[in-house]
Image (tube, rainbow, N blue to C red):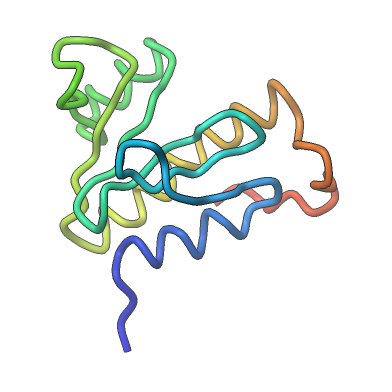
Amino acid sequence: MTQRPSERITEEVTSWPGVHAGPGSRGEFAFTVGRRQIGHLHGDRSAHFSFPKQVWRELFEHGRITEHPVFPGKEGPAARRIEADADVADVIALMRLNYDRVVDRYGLPAGAHPSERAPAA
């Protein structure tokens, strides 16, 4: 049986120490490290993120993200369509990019042990 894209993404991202996932307040399925969201899914069709402006520009220039539909023309909020296996892999990589930034800056949340930190993808 083949997993849906959201199931594959959730299985991988929640395997990283300190990551929790669950429904958000606007119908999204959010992934958080402590109080910080690293991204969220809208079913099996799209993922949304927020990146620092310079990171956003680089990802946008390489075609890995598009503008967030709620914030057109704004650098930072980002979207990624999920249509193929390559998109699933890149959504995971984009979540990992945010995960590593959060953990590097704030550390793992209480209860997550640094020795358990998953290796970079």
